[in-house]
Length: 122
Image 1 (cartoon, rainbow, N blue to C red):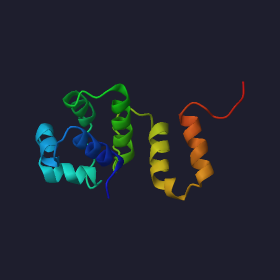
Image 2: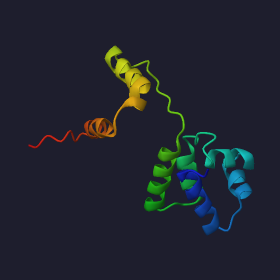
Image 3: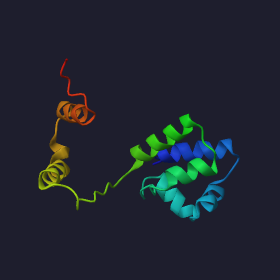
Image 4: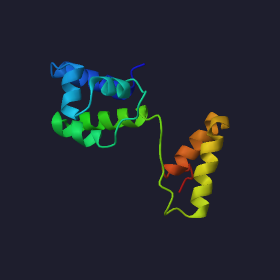
């Protein structure tokens, strides 16, 4: 199934009259690898945000769309925990273990806290 990143890339190729193999060549990968990334079978390499932006001279709006598409398409997230306190490590590990059982309203509360808007009026 095509991811948000894949949809963005497909539109970008159409707008530039390119085939999948053309974009793959510009990214220095095989067509099958790019296809796997677009279909969510592989994570989008982090450097692709900048590389695609530069290759295709994206506008600010396109850059934002690409960034959002990449974020929505990630299948694996890795954290380098070496500089984290034990408390922060515990929180991340607990969330990773328990996120599937959290209710939607609990997830919304957590998101608001993380975004700096915990719903408290000033």
